Length: 237
Ligand SMILES: [Zn+2]
Image (cartoon, rainbow, N blue to C red; front, side):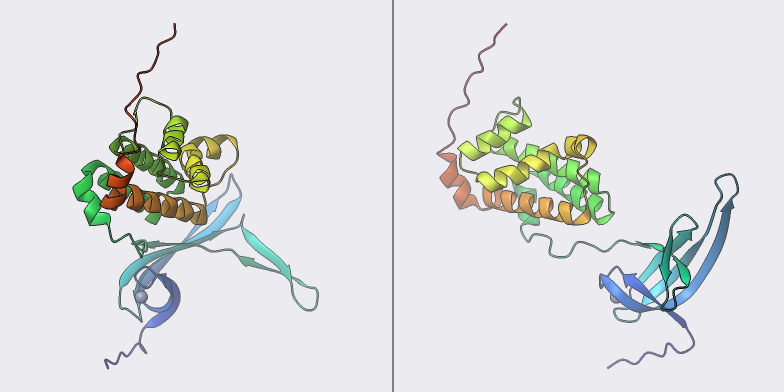
């Protein structure tokens, strides 16, 4: 068992990106900068810290900030008002997604483009770029339908209907994937906020879809015989 002596280091609790959980960390150094925007009448603090997790020993950087606009007001047991700043914390590097699908390397051999888009989605998700991740998922889905020989010229909705007709997806998956393809519009027009939980759900749905329809070769072969010839579109003028 290795022993560590952290006695002469200041410690602080922070979110370790490697453990992906709150841990006691050694503080190697920190610098607090105060700001005061007179015109906007906002003041606050930003603290930059270089930390090391006392559990896994990973090194990381944390930025912790608060401002006078976001204060938590409450009352103590005697009815006196008390206030505490609400801290916004951000760490670098970001925690990597655990449990990435085991078939990721296989998909690279199947189609390098979808592999690249999918990896960019993971990077966006890991960096809390939820809207970008969601829009990226739509692109992943679009590429997947192309690999499955669905006409790239038709609309997203038609592609989904094609997937359903051909047995690649069921009714419920259709509804969820419809949210994936619609996410940009949904966020803009229907107030659909892409929160971490939402993106994780959409990501899982797309992962399951890709695994079943692209990675599991047997099912691809089985399903292939249900794919009808691409019908010629009748042009109406
Ligand atoms: Zn750790």
